[in-house]
Image (tube, rainbow, N blue to C red):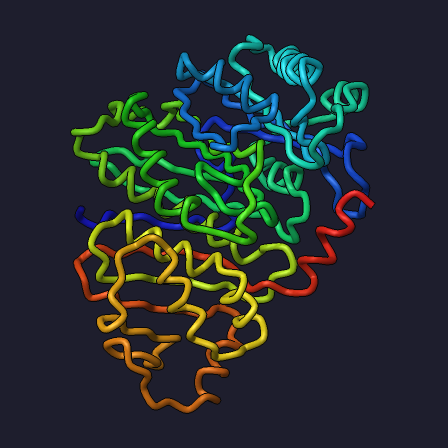
Length: 406
């Protein structure tokens, strides 16, 4: 795939693409602090081709079930999202509440309820406070820079909002892709433990939009881990409204590669932001595995290392206990031959052909104390590679998750 010209947009967000608007308010769903927002809407002035990926957890929230049903027509014009309550494990009432949220939003937008999607995040097993949500919707004011508010409204234990946008050229036209995401705990995605709402003003054919999203998610959100837990509410949604007025992008069209690369850039940026902001995290860990016999095995090995509690704890304490990395590789399910493994932390070689190398421990400690810790593994069995991202495991993670409701 030839590298495309893709430029990041300073201050970009999900409303940077043409024709998208958003807004948010504090409705009282979650505990308030000075920066609280907990209810938001994302809206396109034109109907969108839409695609999404959802949790593979067999317990699915009411919003996920509703969205899966409505997206069978590959169409959407808006999404309403809240934090503070996941509307999961709430039975028939939860389904009714999810539908009512979309109807209330549709009424305020002048849209059809079936074209409005919904997402909820927060505590599982509690009913939505529908009176608060109804009042909150009436307070939301949409704007072309409201993506920043939406990014804050979907936060739970996140410490920072996560948003970005890029622009790319396709022949005589130019399109933009923007996105917001949330995620800090319950992060070990398999389509995908978090929220991510993506928008583009490109015209994109439905089948290609679905495949492009799946491919982008597979190398981004599906390659991060904070705590190996997955949520019933995981949602990745993309909406394409066509206001760039380009010829619709299809699988075999000239702009397809450019669109794919731009979408992947946005998704990887947001995925790394989630990993960096893991609950209690102080460091971003990046694990790259080269020389695997297949892409599937490369991903499996990288994800296993980055999600290992022992590896994460060692990174937190800047403890150069590299044997934990090899142990994780050995249990990953990927094909490994110990006598062929090379291991590096940063640029420092620790293992060559399965044998320990001489190194200065203080040099490794210095790398492990950085805010970003790169771990590179060469399996030397094939040509496949993959990169995964995670974070260290700190005492603060336990504190956060022992006091989530109290």
